[in-house]
Image 1: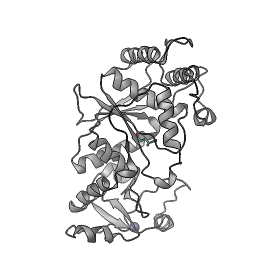
Image 2: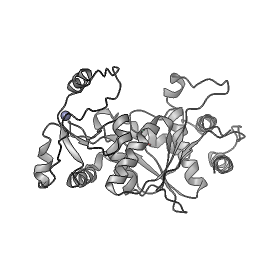
Image 3: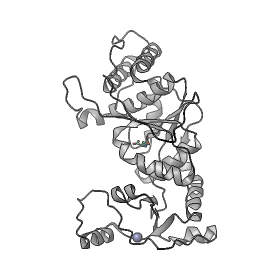
Image 4: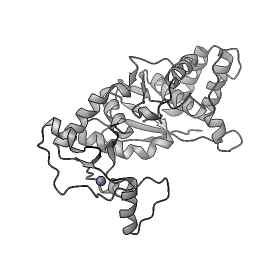
Length: 307
Ligand code: GLU
Ligand code: ZN
């Protein structure tokens, strides 16, 4: 049973220089769903004899949970999912995101926006559009100027938005309809996931992204940003939510509770569950093999099933 969805992009990178990554947000410990993503991306990297990088996506500092990063690192280590190269933290990379925003500004592709959510809802309502409570709003371009000035000095540029956000002025018809001019830097000064992930995937030279299907709806935005920033587009593969042995969707409770890695037996059990979650079958199921042996068998199984 092959459960991975592969989206091949036009400007993809081929070759033996595979560089993958796992990019958890430190909002809590790893649960079965996030372990499955970690395992899937690790196996894909190892099956390609590639590198597997780890990036802590704490760009949204207020949402990060103190201690969560340490727990995640401990859990990955306990499961034998060793990463290559230096770990990077998005919270330490603001200057890189600022450079990218400036680049887009110089190209006349971003503009400041001071709209509140309510303000946007009101404008949409006047157009007969009534989004549901938590639905992402398609921004009706209230603040988008007809001509975006881009000759200001950097200092002026960063003062331009004042308390406002920065949005991208989309030139893509498809994205205009599905998401609208989305935010790259929020009014509170933090960069958004879309901006940070694209800048970091490029600066870490990531060639293959293997992640959960819940993130698939972001891919078009990320490819768009790559194209306007002049970055290469990696391969994307999204691992869908998988059914359990009874054909039932794994419940939120099952997914949300932290995996146990207090000893080798428990870590192995968590890995075995994650592998089933990925649709890998026929793996050593006993508690007697070592984690390294199990991971080797899983890499072999991944190679046979997924390439
Ligand atoms: N940080 C994101 C998350 O934990 C994943 C980002 C990505 O893989 O693109 O959901
Ligand atoms: Zn606005």
